[in-house]
Length: 510
Image 1 (cartoon, rainbow, N blue to C red):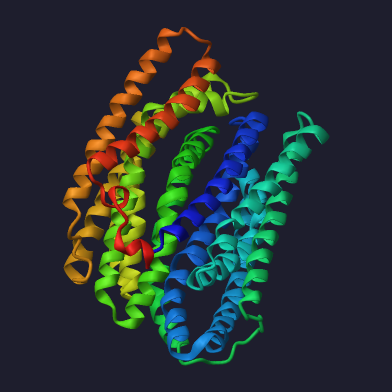
Image 2: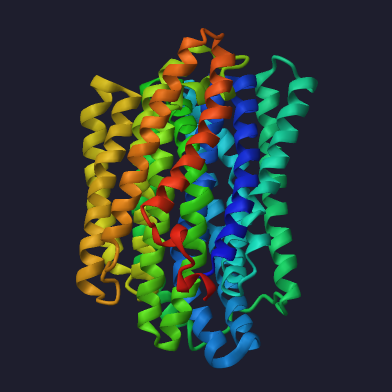
């Protein structure tokens, strides 16, 4: 697995996430946790659910191994012919889904018995649903670029969405000051424009690799296998997305602000998750699929173990840092305009709970890809079904006594089961994933993380002694403590002889 490729993807995602952070800062500063803000976030959830379901979920997982085999056995022209047949079918499915969902949302929009937030959310949902078509096709094309080891264009695609939304927010702020409805409508237009750009640039890059799209619904020998892999994977991804939707619906039913609070806390957790865990998985999945197509099971298992090491080495300290520095991060970046101290205090415990699950989310993503590499789509589906029931049960039990914090706790508890079940069955059913040679490096990560924790706690105490204003103290902790903690953590990893830091690992050149 190439560290260079992981670095490219991580840097691209970092740029995208920084812009996404700016987008969220402007969003909450201009709109706060108002009814219009929560309605937009609820509506924006819908196309993103289908993006993860179709574009980044089952369809991608089913396509990559087959596309890789097509290249290995028939060359690029044969593989691109197969790709066009898949894209043509996906396009027809997405258009049909858009029409069906728009019809269902129209019923909610016209209903006179539901609270206003449901009417607003459904009307905005109809407006934003075309984004689903653009982003799902873009995600499939980006996955093919990853197989071809062209990672840069695919990984920066979200930048275009963030730029478009930021431009819409700034423009709306100055064109329609105080008019939340007009600002939200302009922001929705920004989402659609961003979706078009997200599709255009990866498609343009893939054309340079020799691909040319032709609408083609004729048959192909691999389509049957693609459908066989797709259906259980689609069902599993649907369970996962239904899980998210249930949490959002429960949050939406509590009050007007809970959805916004959960969204913000989750976005901050996704920053390190996307930068590193998703970057590692993005590189390792097509690489493992290539090894499997060649029959090189030893390299497959070795690359998988390296992925585990890197994920834990990055996401465990990131989770600890986010928990300890959650208050200064929220204060520095989000306590502006309509988002005040009260909103920071409401979001703080939710963010701290979500941060606990950061390593769990990362490992679950990698373990699931391990099953997909072996074309085992059913096992993750079975586990996801149990996780759905657990999360719904925990959410209903904890929402009343603990509100938004209860929903976050439910997510953590169900994620613990998710990771444990995936790890146990992956090792049991697919022997190439033995999880060997990890003990020493895991101990190094735990030791370095413990040292970093002491550094952060001591540093926060020192900043308090300076008696600075809230914003100044938050700036000091974020700007000084975070770089200091990262540097000392890397030194500690080196001293503990963590493999990827203490010396060049053989797989880094693969």
